[in-house]
Image (cartoon, rainbow, N blue to C red; front, top):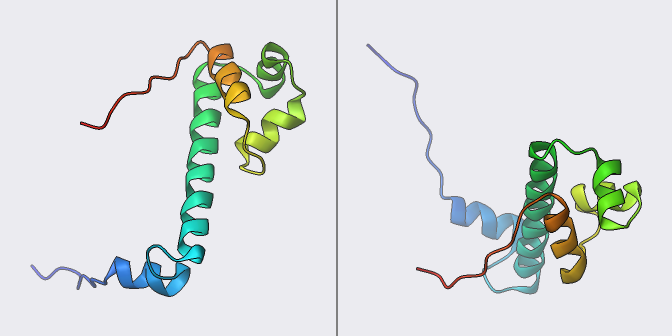
Length: 100
């Protein structure tokens, strides 16, 4: 049985082409934006898992619904204090621990 031809490529080379070399200002900016988008997605998924609407979460945190929407879309990054309020309002906690 013949299978499809699998094409392999060097992801590091692709990342360098798109975002610059590791450690470059462009690459650091791209990595920062990726983390912000990742965190926004985690918060949105957690809110949905908690079965809360954006409006309900906003009310619990003491912000408006638009603020929660902007956080979940990665348009703004909440302060650490607001981040902890958001997490607590969903019945979750944040644990800081050293890398294994």
